[in-house]
Image (cartoon, rainbow, N blue to C red):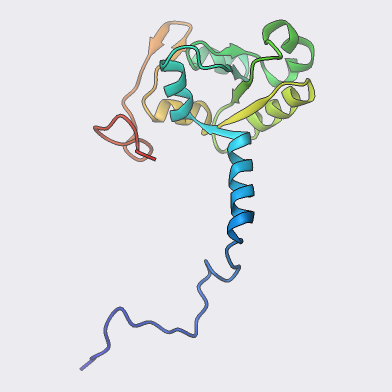
Amino acid sequence: MNTTSPQVTAVNAISPVLATPPAAPAEAVAYFASRLAFHTDVADVHASLQAGDPGFAVVDSRSTAAWDQGHVPGAVHLPTALIPGEAAGLLDPAVPVVVYCWGPGCDGATRAALALARQGYQVKEMLGGIEYWIREGYPVETWEGTEQRPADPLTAPVGAADCGC
């Protein structure tokens, strides 16, 4: 008969999580503050846009065909390759920019953010891109009008306005 409690585990094994120790708190503060200076998420962008003048411009860096499939309402269409020649005519350099592309499996927004930063813009990348914008149930504009799909319960809370984070 086994009398060992299920909570008792071997102390000799090092957790893969702790094989590399966590950073010191001051280093963690610097790192996470830096991440937030470079990234934002779709929920925060949506909430800011809903509140009125958010203080930033939203740029969709995808192709025209992708833009036509659906984009964040009010976004500026500026494909990455066109940023050097067209950003100055479409964006105010005094206004921060939030840029997005397809989704987390795509570096398009990162390349666009780099191109905008090289042009002198303050820029953040919207994590999750249009994929998570749609998956979280936010509306998109298409060439046919505005459409909205139900939120995906794997990416957005069911029955709540936000995730509470």
